[in-house]
Length: 146
Image (cartoon, rainbow, N blue to C red; front, side, top):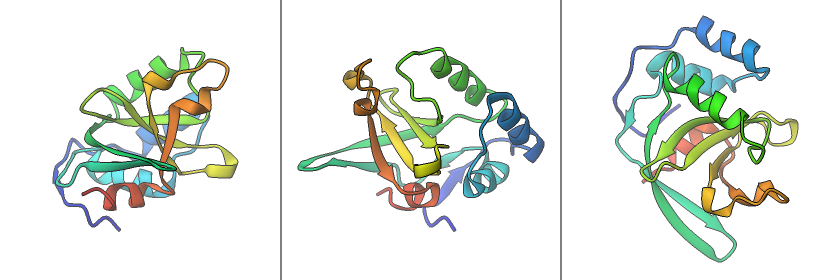
């Protein structure tokens, strides 16, 4: 399922912990995300460079880490849910070296897609402008890092 080597992991998340988060915040984790977190609870990846592209614009960022469950994950959820510009249905799970957030969608039409949040692009009238789709799914996100 994942071809990007996981070089370290955290204490495994329990399925019950993930279900509790789903119930508390009203969303459902994608299955491959649940599988990854119950196996590694985040951890560190060997390849960490994420390609960012929007039309002719192209860049990259270095994925720094995941928010582990029973620690940073819940804190990240609380923080973004308090912000008016955060798109409901986007669940933060990790961050780059500059502190920008990676999230997955729980919306019906793009469920499981991975987005990169760019705080420099926050626009209260057009909040979608601050999010760049980087992958169709979680395994693609992990496996396509260089």
